[in-house]
Length: 491
Ligand SMILES: Cc1cc2nc3c(=O)[nH]c(=O)nc-3n(C[C@H](O)[C@H](O)[C@H](O)COP(=O)(O)OP(=O)(O)OC[C@H]3O[C@@H](n4cnc5c(N)ncnc54)[C@H](O)[C@@H]3O)c2cc1C
Image (cartoon, rainbow, N blue to C red; front, side, top):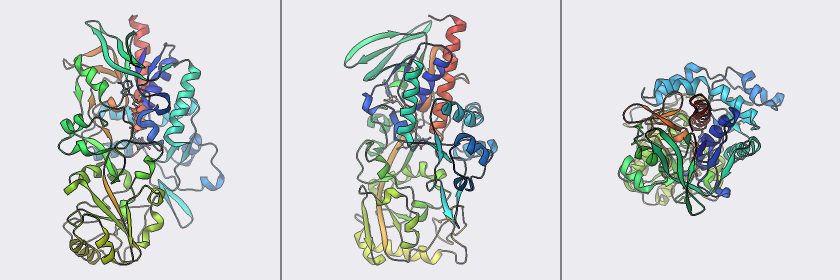
């Protein structure tokens, strides 16, 4: 079996196929030091169903008594289904969504069995209020060591399991006949060769790192978005599959994109990418070049809005915005706001702040802040852990929660633009992970997993679902392909 790609989905596919006894060759386009795709840029955070503290402990046995005193809450199957339905405007494919939700807890135990450790994300998915961490639910556990920890652990497991790995192996085409797919044309370290296999699993990402495809499919201006993660996900797998008739599926003009450091590098850089995140905006107001607010910063907790707000920022004049905070919420800002990779201004008065916001109509910013402060409802206590209902009244664009007035110096502004994470458009697969053609028939020998699966995400995305989905559909594809090879004697 050949697995194309070297991230979480590919590694889970390879490991799962090995579990079933298949011989596996994994082709990673990147050199070894850049291996792991977007997966290695993540926090390693995974959204899963759990019934309470005992389920967390089962996956994080080393938690101390003090840590176990945290309020982990619960995240039921119903909540995960509801989140997927609500966030995708009821468009998520019900069959794929069911596979995702129902396997989300079990997949963590499977990955743990491959040697990966998990811990709750204290501080990033919970705030300490009155001496206790209270988690928002769902996205509670992350791999120890974050994305690099997860990816290194999976490569270690793959090595142990006997998966053969080629780096600098750039898959370019599928070997295909009326019988189906039987191999890959790949350029290994600059030399093109044809490799044959009983089955091919494509797990080589979306097209987020391809500026031309972004502007073609996502629309005008997307060529200028910053790429948050790997520079190797250029849509190759999608293109080679569609060349042989694979069916595109899902939200091809949609993607996951966030507010990101305005002057970030064009592609992710493992050394600094974490510093570019600007996810504390629920405690800010955001203004555009015209000095006006343009979205509801407090519409929901960060996990349910961050992935759609990049597009909104991209749509603003000159594709940028400023997040404005006052001293009351400074302690809630994520650590990356204190890194050296920020475009920040500080000021003792709002007038001084407005004059320092590069490219912004300063007079209008002052009007915006005045109107916003006047619209904040009084008497509702601020609570960063829940949707606190501290909101504005009477504004054309409301702030629905955490609407503290901007009135306590020093004031700070952070410049942001749009950072693209991954694209939503993918290939149609069966519930066994097999790729379907435009004639609505499964293509023998071809499977897909990870970002390449179309039909799960539309418009938005519940934070931390990508790794869970990649692992589940990777494991599924690996198992299905291995069993198909055995039962059909494909060769
Ligand atoms: C900064 C950042 C933070 C994130 N944080 C989280 C998080 O905490 N939790 C979460 O769930 N999700 C997170 N995500 C999303 C998550 O990264 C993805 O959903 C997930 O990693 C996708 O896994 P994948 O295996 O499909 O793709 P990838 O991990 O991107 O792997 C694709 C692989 O394919 C290889 N490849 C591409 N083209 C070819 C080719 N032609 N031939 C051979 N190989 C090829 C690439 O080199 C790469 O190894 C984050 C993303 C980013 C960018």
